Length: 418
Image 1 (cartoon, rainbow, N blue to C red):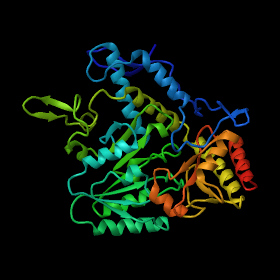
Image 2 (cartoon, helix red, strand yellow; image 1 turned 90 degrees about the vertical axis):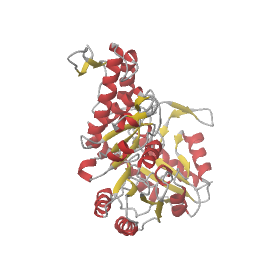
Image 3 (cartoon, rainbow, N blue to C red; image 1 turned 120 degrees about the vertical axis):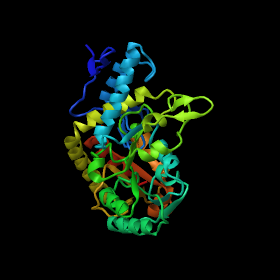
Image 4 (cartoon, one colour; image 1 turned 180 degrees about the horizontal axis):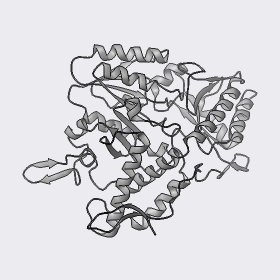
């Protein structure tokens, strides 16, 4: 029998298909997929590009497969399949709310990704809002704002807090918003978002957090941290089905013009149009990405059940990688706040005498290793750290093994003798 989600006194039980499991230790799809080498051989893929897009969790694959037989329109159909799909879609919203520790009256709007979420928020802020953002941000958080004060890269976490404090105090009277990452997509370093939230609120501002690189690695509690808005992407959270989230205070979202105008966002259309009052309806026009939302919720549920084990395992792997890199004299790790700053499983570096793209291609073609090269959609920050050059990024995830770490270190060591 299907798993009960909700029951109405006048309609059949709304259900989610059976067979969706949450593994205590999540597993990714295709963890051991073989990839070709230049010499004609094959090796199991060593994926170090999780920060760009993480592979699908098996639990996510199962959730989507289980939902497909019931796939139908949401919020509009009276048929049983439509009711099942609507129930699964709204249950996904509640899974995300729980995953983020969001206040029960917070809006949870499904979007395409973090970029989409931040652009939605930028459209929703009241006219004349002053936005403060650091140049260290990913472009998704750096670029959408109409009126923004860009702060230079802070030398310490404490300096980040004091710089934000000064900038917010200097803003003109009116709405204010501080935008900041939770974990850098370049260095993996954790930002002091709880302290920054206190500074924002002390200055009458709100805080929006780009959590795209944090939530695949660590739990986040919006309520405990005092965060007003959080954005993240499913494709970085092991749910590569095109969904993202903007969660947070509903008032600005309810008052704003719909991000997209069309069916679902409209409450009444005639000589004039009346828009839906609820923030979720107002900004989710058109047929929503139901399978993306279901996939995202399955990833949230799987990770939430496994945080302690996953975090401990990642810390061991990151230490192994960073210790190994520090022993290679021709490799320089990029860091904003120094080697002891807390971080998630993201490490960027340069290799003396090598272009970053050539390093990435050599690792792929000769060792079956996938890394990212370039400026990682954070051009000002990478220029600041790498002196205008590009860099290589190795990002870890659930499918990373000690063998992968050792293979990467051996391959990088070999570049010194060429």
